[in-house]
Amino acid sequence: MTQIIAVSSKKELAAFIDFPHDLYTNDKNYVPELFIAQRDLLTTHPFHKHNSLQCFLAYQDKKIVGRIAAILNNAHNEFNKANDGFFGFFECINDQAVANLLLETATKWVKEKGANKLVGPTNPSTNETCGLLVKGFDSAPVVMMPYNPSYYVTLLENYGLTKQVDLLAWAWKGQNYNDKSLQMLDRLKERLQRNSNITIRKINVKKFKEEADKLRDVYNHAWDKNMGFFPMTNEEFDYTAKDLKMILDPDFAYVAEQDGKIVGFGVAIPDLNQILRTIKRGRLLPTGIFKLLLNQKKINGIRIMLLGVVEGYRKLGIEACLYGTIIKEYRRKDYKYAEASWTLENNDMVNRAIEAIGGDPYKTYRIYEKTI
Image 1 (cartoon, rainbow, N blue to C red):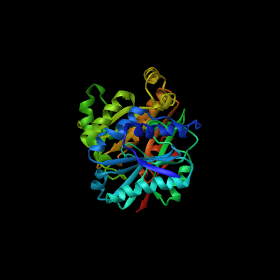
Image 2 (tube, rainbow, N blue to C red; image 1 turned 180 degrees about the vertical axis):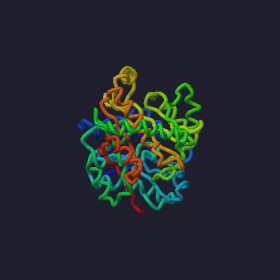
Image 3 (spheres, rainbow, N blue to C red; image 1 turned 60 degrees about the vertical axis):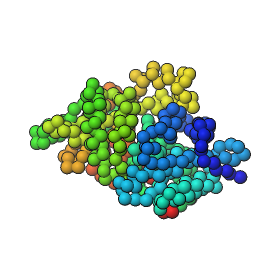
Image 4 (cartoon, one colour; image 1 turned 120 degrees about the vertical axis):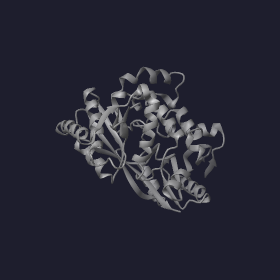
């Protein structure tokens, strides 16, 4: 018999975080999350100041067989005028009855708080990791992207969840890029500067705080029509920016600027998953911290994590210039791979810009929904 408990202690929270390590023991593509990062995300992250989240564990004979978090994202609902409830951090053995019980528990929790729809997975929101992997199970995820076995698709869809939207991850492998298109980008940059006085420059890491303050406003306006988007608070953005600064390579961080005003930006980060997959159970101590610090220079892959242009400056080619500039730098450093993730499946303008420089849509993640 399966028993569901609401996580209420530090010990139970640790078990919640650690469960995937046992579930994925034999999966060569699994990358453990850092324990300390997951603990903070679930407890002290600024997200919790305006929203609520409850973790649940499923047990059979005192053994954990699944987990889920039920999430009420007030910021999302207020911004999108919705009454959505969310689920995230879903992990489960290949057992439909267990999955149904977990999802029903999350459904009941959000419904009691006024939600009329269940949406997910989001961990805990679209500003962090989100989506269920539905295509591209043959390779490991890059940094800050989710991963799951293929049977999760069946578990969620058998519960009655249906596709809301797909998110695409694009890849460049080795020398897989379009030389001609990259050469055209130089002419496009010249035209942007000549016609609109728009220039592409590196983010100034020496003035990172000042740059981050400007980027926050751009972020909250560049994504304002994306599915599920809601603006970050100042505290949430600063929290994220502080984490990114620790791993940021200025050669992969650019802004588009007009007369001193930032109108778009693109940021790629090193794929730390190359190191994280070697850190046992996501623990930095006693040896994980040394692996993380000593091996960062050996990383030869990137993830283009953030790229957006504010309304009024789109369709000028800024997106293509930002993507192309990062990929040209990727080429110069002779990196092994790059990923741009994620983009909405129906964002034709951005997707065409990526395709033009050789991007391959090699993974697909899905956000599900169900009326409750």
